[in-house]
Amino acid sequence: GFLAYARERLKYYDNEGTRKNHSAGLSKFERFLRETKGTSDVPLSGEGLTPALPEEMMSWERTVLENAVNTVHKTMRTIRRFANMAIRDGYLDRSDYPFDGVELTRMRTEKTSLRPDQIRKLETLLATLEAGTAKYPEEGTLAAHVLRGFLFQLYMLGMRWGDLCTLRWEQVGAERITYRMRKTGETKDLKIVPT
Image (cartoon, rainbow, N blue to C red):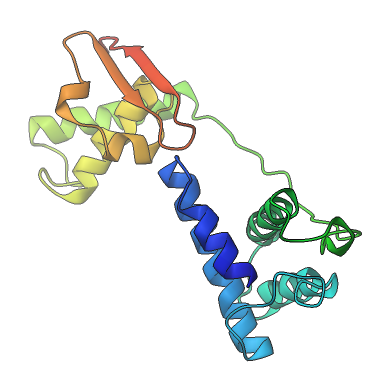
């Protein structure tokens, strides 16, 4: 079946983050199949992977799961990737490609940076926390740790939260931090700049 093939291919992914994302997409596809087709997999063929299947799943994600446009797009990109792999590996005929004519839509998201005055407010809050005069957050709480972590991310050129959470002491030197990004696998070597 298609899911059996995709999960087998997933075992050979090097990047843990991509593996988790694609595994989640496959689990969502399996749930869709169970809830709408009464099965947990479809044949790895044109009879199983019909062109109508991606359209039905996108509609199901939007209506039943109430997923946003970009979430649906991410799931369908995963399914499309494994369909392309199956064609490349000779398990699916090119003429049976289920995504021909299927348009995957995505909305552009606007990301805005914090302004310098907003960063200064966070730094002031941290200073009052460390001086013991902050009403919120209290020292030792999760909120206090998150504040420190968030500021550290900013200082380290926007380090991703997942990379910060998995940072180990041996990756932190006196003047530099060296780590491998979970999302891309790229190694980062950053100078620690005094604040």
